Length: 121
Image (tube, rainbow, N blue to C red; front, side, top):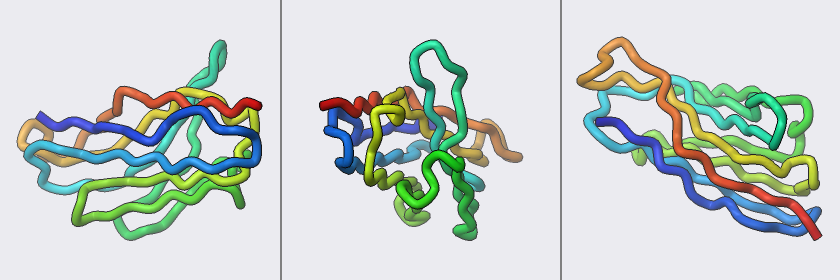
């Protein structure tokens, strides 16, 4: 069974930095696109950043220039480096990955359990 496990969330002051990690485990054939989404209280889940297997990236306008997504294909892990954090970045951050596995040979969008990021003084 494929799982995504996130880590790295926490409480940080405005202007600070955090680095989120998300590792995929299980019997994995390949991982296509990976990404990060977030959901603030009372709001819909929104895309933060995505990265393809070839390394092409895409960012929400609200995080461009502050966040950087990267991945280590050898470790089946995606990262989100968040700098210059603002109170409006406060949300639960979810990892997403399109993973081909024994159960889903053509791929399936898996989600992590979420990690809380709180930006407050």
